[in-house]
Length: 203
Image (cartoon, rainbow, N blue to C red):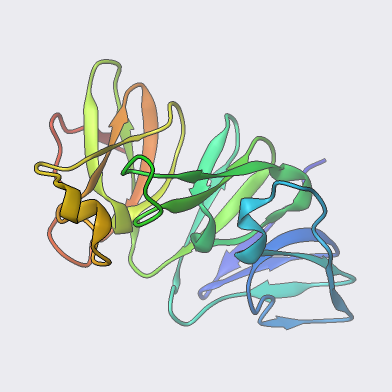
């Protein structure tokens, strides 16, 4: 039986168990909350997510990202690691680094893959789930992307020069292209609204 999570008043509450949690989590807990070592040679999200064992109820929340989104993992879900608040440890299926600009670490995104159970994401803005149908392409600003299913996205920049790759600022107007069929969760962008070549269907 899957362990349930309760979301209320900006908090995600879980019971006793072993969890993947964002840093400085849980915010409050009964009993003990002990951090365990994450083992493995290739764990790119180790610096962003902690393995925490709780003996009783624990509440997770973060002031800077007050909006919580619960995603069931009926199919593999790829989530931006730093936006993951809590998930069952057994849901973890791997992690990777997505580089929108090939061979450049600037604007790279650490992504955690979940293949079972569920996860809860914490974002600075409200999220929306967008369905992208087969043959359509959704373009989203990198800072707005929260999670997705389906194929790995590709980077796109209207104009990319050698200085865009070398300078610390990185390229301007860099987007991620999601090719359907897939689902994409996005939050509000800090800059301009996300653009689409073909808009997916909002759910």
